Amino acid sequence: MSYILRGTSKNHGIRIFAADTTSMVEEARRLHNTSPVASAALGRALTASSIMGIMMKGDNDKLTLSINGKGPLGTIVCVSDSKGTVKGYVSNPLVDIPNRADGKLDVGSAVGINGLVTIIKDMGMKEPYTGQYPLVNGEIAEDLTAYYAYSEQQPSAIALGVLVDVDYSIKAAGGFIVQLMPEAEEKDIDILEKNLSQITSVSHLIDEGKTPEDLINLVLKDLEPMVYEKIPVSYKCDCSRERIEKALISIGKKDLDEIIKEDKLAEISCHFCNTVYHFNEAELIDLRKSLDN
Image 1: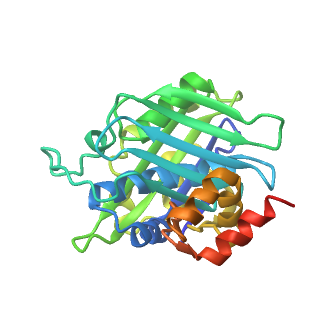
Image 2: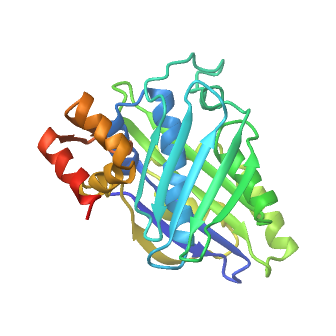
Image 3: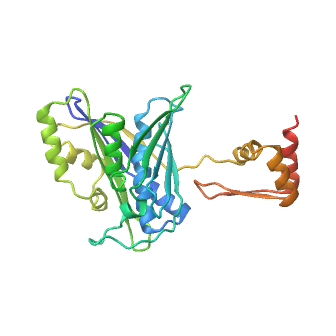
């Protein structure tokens, strides 16, 4: 089961969210049949999106993370809610590029660096909040760290990892986001920086059996960490035939008439789960008639 822990240092100067998202990322890999490097990129983005969703307070709040660095992977899109439920996709799930010289998956080259990370927060206001920042290296964790520092003025350290097995399944996935609060003291920041410097690969830690509880204890070592909440999270698409019908209606009378006349059917696939919805001629005509009412 994938889950996220919410915690702080004892004096509340530092807050942390730590996650094991192995089963969540495996579900995404299964649905999208992603290549190893696409699995790693999408898995990192899904983990971050799930944590960032939990940071929001409203029950109906939504967060969309979009990353496009003009690389062969194309665009990564993830959508999460305040319960950490997430869905996502990549434009080219079958992208295949050589590994880095150290043997690791080259997520940075797959994503590219000639673009932006974009965060859209829909919190029920008149207009959603949108923040953007140029990509740093396409590795996603560093890109989001820079986004928080410069777009939201929130000092953060982010680690994200996905370990792909030889059969392309997800062996381990997870990460953490740790942030400084206004109450943070210099001596605590020094301790935090020392602890972070000793953490190399979060996915390998999870593969070795380390839990989110262990991650929090490592990151906040000597800072008396306190865990407040354990939140189960999952990959779940909320598409439905009704939603697809509304999408078809939204294209307007002219385009619907054209589909009915030329194709006599419609086949629409959901980006997030690859479910295919079929509409025959009679169903399309009924949708078209609804526009006359």
